[in-house]
Length: 411
Image (cartoon, rainbow, N blue to C red):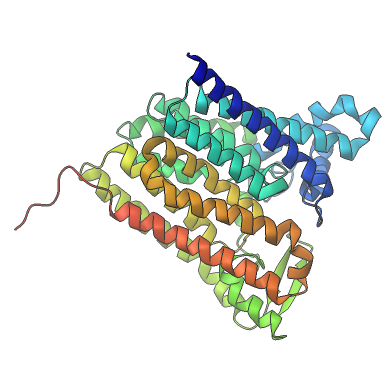
């Protein structure tokens, strides 16, 4: 490795560490408790499991897939030596931040290696920028655990398809969204049977372990828990109703069952009920387009990135929930697109960076105003949600334009 390459790698690592340290610190100073989920939800769940109390996902139905508890327990272990000095909550926050930074560092190392190509350097700069613009939400949510896992899994799909698919499946058992990358890999990768086998083995292992621990109907509770919830105020579909709230014709209410703010207005229930079927149909349609491209000879570097990003974006746009941490889902697909086909990834990458900035302006910086249905805050959220739809359109357009080797012959 020459001196120039060494300097570039050192610069990337310095920026990575500075961005993560700054973002972790901002969690302590930003308004609206951006670290709230970590200390108010994750830490009690971990404490309950470690102290012999109820175990979420096993003794009771849980909103997350069961492997989400594992990083919460690891954070508790990391924080234990700091408890006498900082107290339980502060120590757990430090432990959680340390865990995320460690995982991100491992994935960053896999991404750039010792002498990264230009595409990987650009992808690394993009990741640092996305974390900085998104703010503390990029670190202080369970979704942050899945980003490095999904990134490593995606980077290894070609060279180690079984290992890559296993990592993506583990990520999906922490938060569902990496399953979209598994689906995209099954469609776009020639070694799809190895992907399916690895995903099946991981899933079977998780289910068998849960059964041995005493879970039964709770195993798929993370799916059933979502069916009856209302429309969260930050969801894309909630945007028109938020403007009704600005006009005084709708209400923003807190759900103590789901622990989130939802919109209440005529027609909301019908929209919320329609979103899950719409998500399923949309995912099937996009997958069918990708499968058709694959059958006709599309290459993995051209097909996988737009298919993966489109599927992940669909999960956000058609979701009843619009949590700010959902934007972290977009980071790994864009990094993979930059690595595999950086020229065509430029526009989606810029859009995702804008989404990260707008999301931070909504939460935590402007969240109090949003809860008051302040017009400016609602306008910022509206732009963010419109941009999500734009990203979806860009992904679909790129998918449709993927070239094939065996075009249909003229009849």
